[in-house]
Image 1: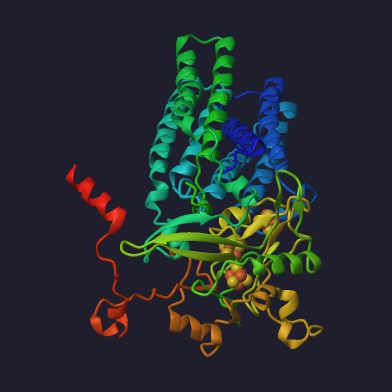
Image 2: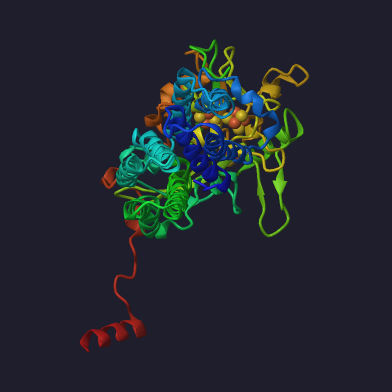
Length: 290
Length: 252
Ligand code: SF4
Ligand code: SF4
Ligand code: SF4
């Protein structure tokens, strides 16, 4: 799949933002007043910034409101609803903390639940696609959720919890990679089933339908950089989890914590780039690619 | 509404005969022509006469070489467009309701004025049947020429999809698969019409007729032409200079 920067930024930052909102809603850290304002501002910049960036890859962003209509069948529509509900509820809850010095616990709890649901619905947009066997796995939502919780805990300053959650995210990520490498072969879809010609003999793409490129090849048959994927996987795990855990374990200072956050975000961006770039769409089989 | 209908009254679709298709791409061109000039946003081309041409097409013809374990390789031309699936994953993923499957005839369409161009439906289609138009930024797909098949302004003979009307080889057939007596249903039954990627669970309406088995020349004497003995090669051994060369080289 084509790794569109807008979607990579969207999933990474909205994941972290909603992860942080989840913790704030549960009262970790139990901040009030202007400190609370600072935490909420960071969460909203990440979450809303991520959502805005996702609209950049729309052909007609001016019609985006229509995307709220099909929640009965579409995960993308459900994601829109969850995000809006989470942001509105958390705004009210945050106002209570910042301006009235009140903690409306129930509201925080509802906001947390919808923050988690937002990350989950985002992950289901990818998980539901049978056409991309690498994503079509329960490990995909596990990966998105574990990243959101780890990043959220890190930003919420929950040091011990963050270290544990970062380790969990790393394990889930490695599992998703290992499982994904055999997913296309294990899916049963091949050039033989794509063309229906497999019972005659072995099928080879002889001539493509067009001499130039097209939307399908640009969007679905992205192969650039795949040969570096092993190196990039190591880089992303080190930046996303290993280095932040080491920094947090070293000793607590705001400087080290900031470095841990930067390192985690950089690692998450690399990992998300790989998530798209490595994903094989079955339509590539018609072109003899994969 | 992007939930799929439980069932459709008719199941309109195509039969594509892989045995007959000669790979002329006439159906590709007639499709592009009709759908650029009629319903919906035109199918754009970018850099059409430059070094990096690209364009939107709703029907494309691949060519495959199939090598059996024994015998000659076969070349098979393979036209591909939307298969108007019964369990269309492209419809259920659409967040806006722009994509839908019609209850009356099963045709899968995009309402372009509702489409936000998110591309998710193209991700969900295993067959590459949807293309985002690079200029209009909306999703384009085969409409089964919905603006021809019911169009009373056209002569009756033209009320079928442009690709079917155009095909010079008679490799494309249009009809109602819900009717067991329609010629598409009969063709499918007679020739073993197949689904593409059945394991994806999309239940395509369009069917593909597999290439017929190749003729083989029988080895048994009875099938060999009566004149065959007279066609035996006359010169069994090389004579003259070549004969001398052959013998000399043999000796060395
Ligand atoms: S072929 Fe693709 S676009 Fe057409 S109905 Fe099936 S899944 Fe949808
Ligand atoms: S590109 Fe258009 S038709 Fe396709 S899923 Fe998005 S809104 Fe629906
Ligand atoms: S017009 Fe007919 S013969 Fe020519 S490529 Fe299309 S289906 Fe094949």
